[in-house]
Image: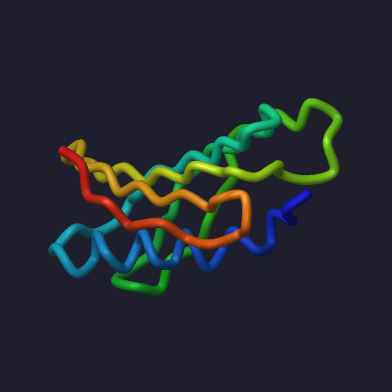
Length: 98
């Protein structure tokens, strides 16, 4: 299992990509693992000083996330940043989607 704490740097990468494009908080996020572990929430704050709040979590009685994992961050204008963590724990992305 991939510990949720190790997903934080990946979300930082996504947030920075959106901040670099001129977007600001709030940001809304989702993490979806191949074992059905799902977490959603939002990042609030000013500039790059953002604090996450988890609004929902479905663990399916798992101790963590199974690889691969897909991460998404959505802006208030609907722009989406996506990143995946493959079966070796390597990051792929970010991709900015419209």
